[in-house]
Length: 554
Image 1: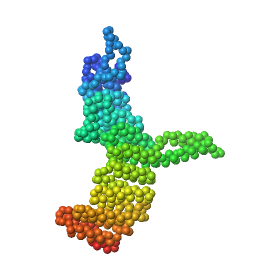
Image 2 (image 1 turned 90 degrees about the horizontal axis):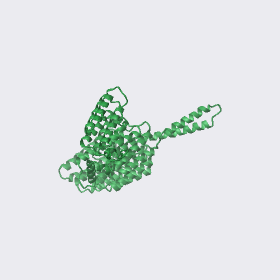
Image 3 (image 1 turned 45 degrees about the vertical axis):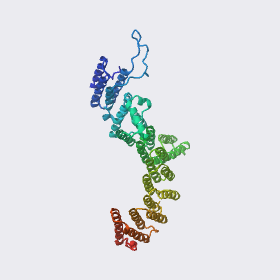
């Protein structure tokens, strides 16, 4: 048996004692041996928490003991000699008992509180983890994830990501047929998830809650990925995306969303790094030209060295164009759209805002195109459509760099969709809301879109829609909402909105209020209307606005 190097500390003596007991008592059952090893590991973590070689040694010896105990004994001849010169390493092992599984799981959990992310430095940790059934591996993976998140140390290289996600495999994907066959509880969980997805059985609430908790823990790992180099961090996100991609549609709604937002935060850095790389290329080219044709009296050796240093600095950079970041996001969100259209729509909108702010207007327009595709082809619920249109209008109000033609195309499409909603009250409110896109600021504001005629058209159309609403209480309530829109544009100096429109609408609302039957609905509308009139009277009393509001008949 392999021994630790000669050492005078107490661990070596205790380890030798444990190994001697195991060797001398060949009849010891595996759970008893595992309990000894767990006690040794607990002692090690309390007395030698920084000695990873000790921890690795214990884990390695435990894996070896398990393999020796569970591997089938070689066949022997009549004289007791093995028939095969060497044991077959591919021979199937016997299954661990429940007690043994519990002890191995405990043993793997012992170092997590102290080591957390440093367990990646333990070569034997993964080997021992592999002996557990799938569901028990998942329990250890959850404990490891919690420890890593609580420690909050940054993960700064691709190799660490690969190692960590290798240990977290049971959280990142479903078991294969062979893995499920070796673990009955995993097979049952997989079958339950499949039937729930197909709608044949109602999902187990506890299992669904545990699954969501696990995936949210995995998603938080994205925020631990850090690097001073933007290109390196992008490469880490690419590797993370590949690992998350094995999880199927159940997992991506939790794991891919933070990855999209992390990439959106990174893209401005990618753009800066792209500009810096271009500067270094120019500097390297200039240094090379100076070295090849030095001026008279120049130090040729120094110029050559400067050219080599410039080339080396350029070669050491891992550069990705900012457009690659947007392409990465486009691929992720497109993959999510068929299963989670509302989430995908919101992420496309967020990406459009980011692209617009960085002046990538062609990319922003492409993202908005994808938004309309999702809206038209994947959203059928009327409430979801209203939520989507509200978010789309809000997004366009944040965009300032679209070309006039592209902006008009998007806004016109939005207005058309607002006017074709299923419910008339929704139509009325959304047509009123979309009018804000035709007046996004004063004409002297850079990037503002000002079209008072289109604003008036939207409000008049909203009035017509409100007028045909069957419920009188809803009818009048919508009129008051539209009145508030008129007041807003009147205050915003939209030339097409005059005091005549305000006075006429106020008179119309008063007539409808008189025809309403007494009740809670009438009281609510009266209160809303009274507050609006009070606002107008206040404007008429203020010196700065009295002249403008003087002719509004309240």
